[in-house]
Image (cartoon, rainbow, N blue to C red; front, side, top):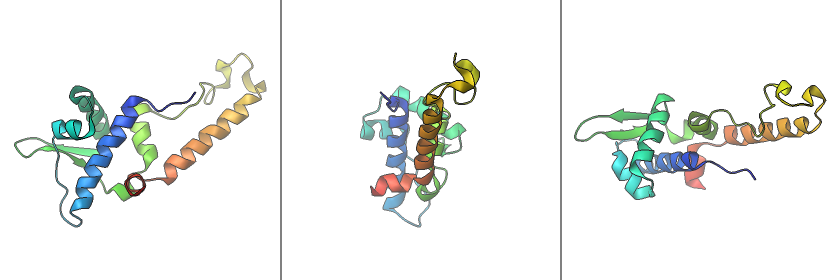
Length: 140
């Protein structure tokens, strides 16, 4: 069955944590949160979270600051951060099956009728993730 990888679950939890900090003081500059604080609050292994935050930073979704008051903060408002950006930053493009980009990887090739189903599923997932923002997750 389909399942969301733990890394993506943890990444979304970390971003929700940072977004709630932003939401607590609207209009004020974003506050940074140390990765250890995020890890403790969200129950995420600290070393694992560091790798996740590095990926999110490389994708331009979080910013990091060094120093005594350093940490991580959102790179843009939660209302502008699409869930598809987050998922793709952590896992790459969503692909229910490997033949979506290249029908040649399947023994049936272009004659594979179930492939149409898989293409539709991908489009539905991408559409849903593209229509939702991090703010939507926070607001439920």
